[in-house]
Image: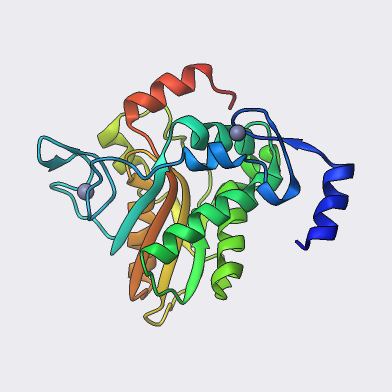
Length: 242
Ligand SMILES: [Zn+2]
Ligand SMILES: [Zn+2]
């Protein structure tokens, strides 16, 4: 956005920082500088899956077939990032996808990922209708544009899927089997960037990566906006809107 346009947009559409509520300009993308500086990469992240290392062992990918070639979350699901995502998803502040895409794009660049095509974890039609958008897809499209690569829907949700929310760690890995379908039969060795919103057990990302690999993807790089533990998710869900 150029400066003159930004001033006009600010005048007609002033907004508040999604995390602290301070007034922000259109250039800030809905998050003030202080809150943006409060977003940090997850601690104790496993180099293979981005999960948490506890007592020298990864709680996510140890003793498991793990399909992504690289996988990480951009930030912890706490503080400003948590507020940003909650506003984006539950308050339906769709415009915040631009700020999240900027943060994800920076992480993709720092990780020096070479990508041919960008895709997102799919969302069932009913949920998209309810929320108005697939939060991962909106960001993935914007990231694709920033890196000059094509966004393609490579996966879809198959039929009625049971939500992961009320399931424990192991059941989630079983529940995702058959949950998604691949939309392109031959990915011709493409290096795929797969975008997801919140990384909890890694079950969804792992299953999507498995399908992409089975359809011929050369590499799958999975990037989530934020990481939280199952315990944190349970605590959040109690106060969450659906
Ligand atoms: Zn703020
Ligand atoms: Zn791991």
